[in-house]
Length: 478
Image (cartoon, rainbow, N blue to C red; front, side, top):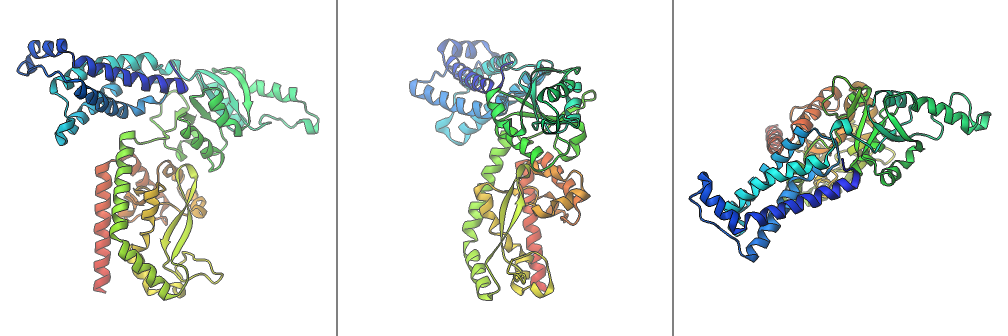
């Protein structure tokens, strides 16, 4: 199996070359004649050989579409042969449909049917063979795997359970001390002997041993061409555990962990035998993410433009009311436990010490603020957060960072919502589930993550708009 950046480079170049070669070959007169004369289904078609200009355009269009469709397979990870063939054929089918759709809507970009048919045949044969050749099976996986964590017992369990070679482990400088250190009489050799007890005797084969501290994860990924990290922390915390997840996600590294941590994580289907599970760092395919981002940008930009007079009127009304700043800001949780600042129109009077809070004390409420909350117009500034990429139109609502410990106490699976962008609305919101019921809310959030699609997002947005219209009608009738 080719690993790391070499796999990414080889896979991209391979798909590009095979696609270009397939289109070029499909355009040769010999293959055009063979197709139109000897294949019964298409024997009524005449050969359609593109000229040099048309061929260059066909090569460009086809390569862009196919490479874009195969992006998920450019990540180095072990796959079974049948899984590789299925994934490749699925993406070949998507690519061909995309080519045909593009030609339908823009005639100048249309490829001849003969060329598309022959290209499909070549891609369906060559690309599965190519990916099977460069992709390793799970039994031969992860030659560049490292253990990352601060839990000695967890490292022991990983070494005992992991059936494959390991490069080594990243851990705090003295994670395996048993009561002695250099400062209180212990020596470095004492620590090495204790560490050896952890790394000897298990199924895994350790090449290097202790590589360094947790802060060296990014450096280790680059220097050792790591493609898999197995996390062995004592708890799933925001800083170290999710910090390691974020680093691995940024570098395209697969992540595994012990089954004990699954309550707090999105994981792939668990096997019956191994206590080590795969963490689902990217629960949505690239195509879904591209469509979702295009929808976010279009929705936010259009809404900001259409609502710009309303935005100015609200800002002026808040200033005229004279109870404090126009905007209210607060830290909310983003992907992998990171935080960002969310903005709303202020709907309450400032607290006595001058801060703008969210406690709904009667003496702090205003008629304008009540109207903005009832009509959801206080959320308009979050459209900017969507436009710049901090939020999405649909997703789990961003929770107040300072309150999330309380939510986690009531809902053990709360952190599963940290694997996707927060949203302006979501499945929980249209079902009237709020943070007052964390266990109910997180169930809706996880259901959305698993069911996400463009059509599902549109349904949620339409239902939210209907609820807003209903609230406005109810307010008018009062």
